[in-house]
Length: 215
Image 1: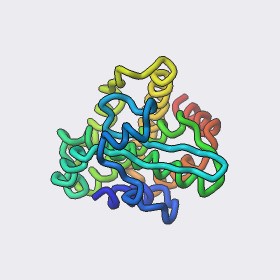
Image 2 (image 1 turned 120 degrees about the vertical axis):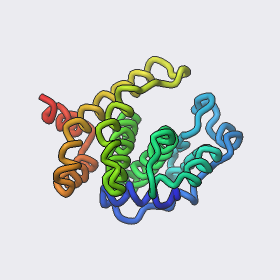
Image 3 (image 1 turned 90 degrees about the vertical axis):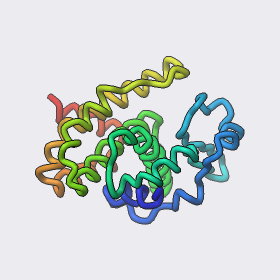
Image 4 (image 1 turned 60 degrees about the vertical axis):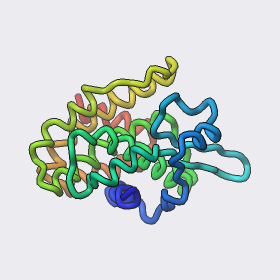
């Protein structure tokens, strides 16, 4: 399932072949904590672990094994369930981080932590909306934006800088997705074209685009 969800996000942005996330996946929280050390928040169920030096970039994606088992059994690619959206969004967030870092590295471009979080919030909304449309789950479409962006809560162990970053990412993504959601339903091809252009913009241009769409 995780490979199909990764492909789902990759297809949205047409980024071509990316590394198979299953080759970089860690599902044991003890191993992830050992590797991540202080970068791991307590009780985290999703974390992208990475380090970079003169020899290159090393990364792993931690997704909690119990979370993955629940999603595997539910198979959201066949039928979305509101009670498992939190699990789905954690997996989509991790996959978004992984895909974005790998694609940017292939382009020899850097990516900021704020940009990673912004892209992940967008990917959770867009990825779920497209699944709901493909499955004919129109009753969910009117709720997804509120569930994801208005009913948000943040991890209690975040420091002030981290909390500010997550809040900013949530706010920017909420504004971008609010302007986009009608086009996703009514003119999917145009919405996907906009998403692909947005994905490739520098961060400063992404913020300018969001402001221009929400004046």
